Length: 195
Image (cartoon, rainbow, N blue to C red; front, side, top):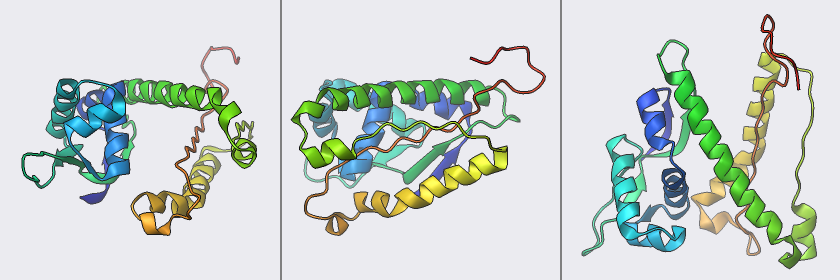
């Protein structure tokens, strides 16, 4: 497994742009290795569906077969971290990146909605720690990139615990941090009205 996979390939991004495939990538990131049966148990999908989508992820280099254990055939990610981004020099890359981002955002929002519906069951300290923050910034493109890098640096010590269970405090739980930075106004020279 490599540390990082970065792609702007529209074919690969389209192959990833499926809610179950994104969920399988997340599961393999959490579990390290998992069979199609384990993935089916965790997602509520059929074993056949999980198996098909794992094979598709393997076809495009996102996952690979792990060492077989008896009759079990586990899968694992090919990289710990995955970054997809558009490359304006690659035809179709911008559209594929946008399609993938919209599917990812819909998945994130759906899971956030599930968590928000369970808030009444949370202990007070977890209720207080659950936040939705939005901020309007006046920044240049390079400053916005610096904001992204600062968020990454802030989260990295906690993200590292995914691969190191021994580093987790006894009362730690999985949590989701979502950062989306984007311009609010249309690009200069376009006719679109700001909303």
